[in-house]
Amino acid sequence: MNARLLLALALLAPVSLIAALMVGSADLSIGQLLSNDAGTQRDIVWQLRAPRAASAFACGGLLALSGLLLQVLLRNPLADPYLLGISGGAAVGALGAMLLGLAISVKFSALAGALAAMGLVWGLSFRRSQWSLHHLLLTGVSLSAGFGALVSLILSLAPATSVQGMLYWLMGDLSYTSAPGLTWAALLMITALVLLFTRHLDILILGDLKARSLGVAVRPFQVGIYFLAAVATAMAVLEAGSIGFVGMIVPHLLRLLGMHEHRWLVPSSVLLGGSFLVLADTLARTLFAPQQLPVGIVTALLGVPLLLTLLTRQHAVR
Image (cartoon, rainbow, N blue to C red; front, side):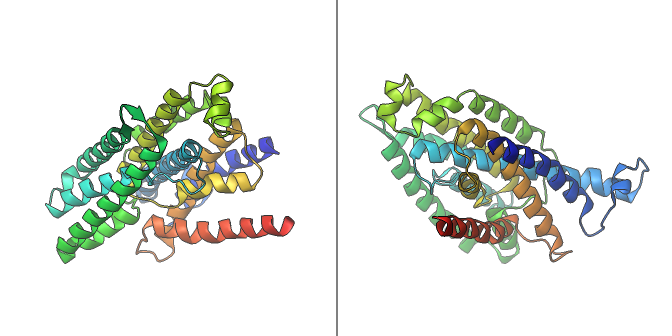
């Protein structure tokens, strides 16, 4: 069952990417995609659609992987990549740069905000030199609320001409992605690292005492999970803004489909998260073309009914 589902997701990934290349304001055929003729069509595919689709897949994979790691770390099915305030810090940095008219430094400011939030959560989650998951969660939630208030303040102070761009960033925007190489490198490196410790993830979810009895160095492993999830979230936010719902829903969907071992869950989450965001972004730029929607709106509109449908069917079977 797990192998078949993983194979299906491995086939879905290239299908979603090809669909993103074909569909748009100017629909293209497979033959036109494969053509080497120079011209407008080639520019549309390789300069506009291909970088955007590649960025969407990498960001979706990072968010899904981050959500999976945080759900294991906190043993909370509601955990998602934005729970620990990292995206809030990035949002304050990015929107602050926009407010000051520093458009060229938006990504640098978002990176500075994400790193500052990561450092604050890490530092404040210590108590008497001991690191605590409970303090980590409370610190992250508190900082998220504080960053949310700062974002609202920036929006209220921003001129009307800047508010739309800020809102698009807050709801996820892949319009300006052009070089997804760094995001892909982060996705591949983090996925490879996590795959080395899938057995430890299976054990950790059973509880700290059980994990220690089975030889897992619990605290160092939890710290490693936190930093990998934080880096994955930060890289996705820097590339595409705050795209909600992907990190929470993708691991849930896979578990509802019967996948529980992390040696299957990790690659499946990356493939499904990437494909889901590619398809959502394709819809976001084509549903009301030439106007484009923030991709975060589409992920929620697609994800909520899908998750509720699966939950309803599971309840009916029981």
